[in-house]
Length: 89
Length: 415
Image (tube, rainbow over all chains, first blue to last red):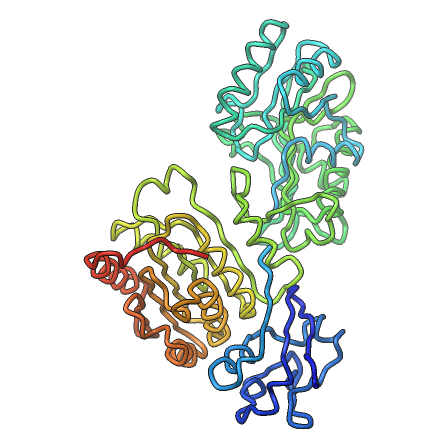
């Protein structure tokens, strides 16, 4: 079992990816449009599933640009396993 | 910008060492009577609201007897509780004085430096006596000098205490990151200068340094309490400075005048233009909305969720100015919000919506709407960079009338 990849983001939300379903994904669409505040993306492919190229601390401080592309692209072209919770206060 | 109430402003002014009248903040008529007895009649009753010109609006009353006090309190709490949502009343000692002065430090947008303003004709008629206000631009490195004070008073010898008041007021301006600190009137009574009324406006971008103030909303010129939606919208920017979200609900009397259309734009000017064009077409914008400065998609998501949560919305308009904002991110935020609001249709709205994308990544934004099937909806019209604000309103009008002619097709928005 690969479990879930989860990390908090600056605005107060949480990104969650169910890695168990990522193995069978042929597109890895979540990685395609991933951006960060640096020159490399947040999500990278490692052992056939998405992994983080940043520390949790960096992501919570704004390294993730919160573009939502991973969730929306996974929904259209992947296995619908990325969920981004964005609480509205 | 965050405008503080008189009571909040006076607390800061008193702590800086400038005298203010003894006063108590109360919430009920009984508390007000008890405060008046403690202070001693005559007292001044001042409703704490952000309205300007409170004296002319009957929001400030001077009472000299117990009977007058009871009668005035009944009036204030009965009438104003519904009209201006009276929640706090300042009961203050009444000062006897002769002259009223006007003193203010403001951030001058033209010279980008502090500007000191003074008039010997202060009080409620200061607007009528604008030509009598003396202005002195300050060097922020030097603060207030004796030359500045001498210039303001036109060379006249002044009470030493007056110079200290100016310096203390300037100290507040600097230490509290103000856009404006104003005392009007400043009076000389009982051998000291006393600030009878005061106004402080804090720079919204510096509010994070003044959490002790508990300011919930930094929008400017709201002469009323913020709504819960506006407070929620302000929280979107609270800890995230990547782009900005500004949402203001239109006041209730205006909302009764037409079909309520929600809107969100990229750029304040576009938002105001769209509001004008919608009104021309016979609609009434429910809100002002601006998400600009290249905000994250998550900010757009939250803004759209809040905007669609308004009651009795009959349509929605989104328009961007021609800017460098990354509109594909903007589109993603909108799409995620629509999918949350309309899960059973995959984000296709059940109210007429017009989306106009102009600027950087605008074509990507349009493609995203296509990919997610939202632009296929009969309730959606997509416009690109060859359109303008007038087109948006006209297209919305055509769409709204077309959809309304089909029974059951124009419904309330839901969240």
